[in-house]
Image 1 (cartoon, rainbow, N blue to C red):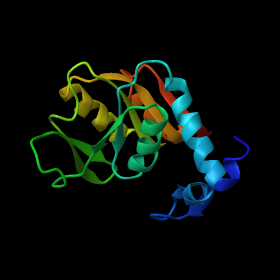
Image 2 (tube, one colour):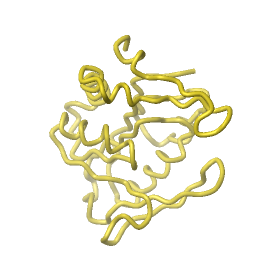
Image 3 (cartoon, one colour):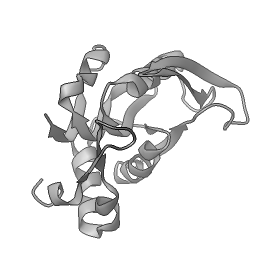
Image 4 (cartoon, rainbow, N blue to C red):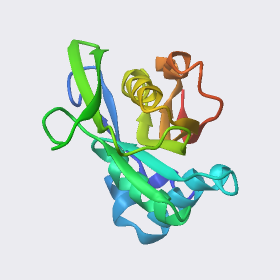
Length: 173
């Protein structure tokens, strides 16, 4: 962890006043840091039969594809509306100010297929909870969730009670 912590920088008042944004782009630019982050996100899920990694748009794509490669399995993207050309499973969900919508191709996951859900950040839990709903529509077997960063004070885990394993590499109070 000591290698990763200096690669995460705080950006105050972004995207709005009062927010401290955890910027991990320095980690992405550091080959050792990126490799370590991917390994630490993947390791708890080695040997448990993961068949697909599902990544939430857009930063979940960064880690999701690398973790899929590390686990020798495929990758499926969860997209924002209008990005997928075939029939989709869809879910609307609440944001702090307003609503959002996520989609996944209906044929992307076979019923019962064992999946790992990946994103960069667990904050309020809204996006990941919506992804869990999408995976339920697809009848996936959710093995767990892996994130790089968890902001514990926002209590996002509480929105994920049906998920057995929620793994965060870095946790901030």
